[in-house]
Image (tube, rainbow, N blue to C red; front, side, top):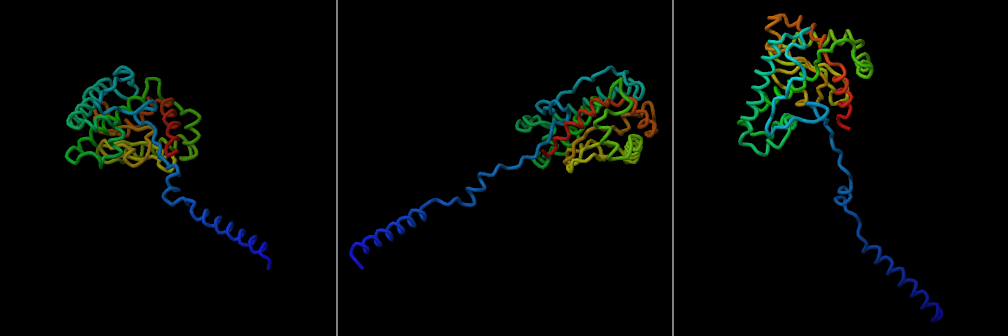
Length: 264
């Protein structure tokens, strides 16, 4: 083999070796660096007190009724409305503020966030926040989903989903009333969008709200005795039947459409 050929072969081998060294020195992304480039999935929970925003806890404030005390007379008398709003709801607001008076960090939160993360609330005030934060949120929703011009049939969007889920509007009302009548003691009956994105009728005890179970409350009826006792005494079923005459379907339909954002 000539000297010229040997030199050529040597140059080729040297080039190959240099290329291998350069390749081996390149940085290979680690699993950690690769995972850092993945955008995490964020669970989205739309505002609950109103589609327009959440309830502030710093401090909590009693919302004004959107109508006169006597405006829902088709189902609820003026004396009950005044006692319910000015007495019971006001007490929940005052008690919540009292529970949070030494908790500036919690005051910067929303009422909804407090209820969804009760384990992060100090144990010595947790029950007070649960009961009164829930009472404040539940009643804030309640006043909005009733109207003097209420009643009748639901709008097309929510009507179609009600019919698909429950068979018919009449069947939905019957199931809703049944659940409300069967709720033992004090509590609420709700139409919610559950975490699977489906409509569902549920009940909660005391002042618990469905967001504590990851569901979005679209509409709810208060079945505490203070909501109906002055007119109906112990006739909860009659109250449940008459309540449909004041249901604010446009607002409920709006809440239903907002609830479609759940988890997206």
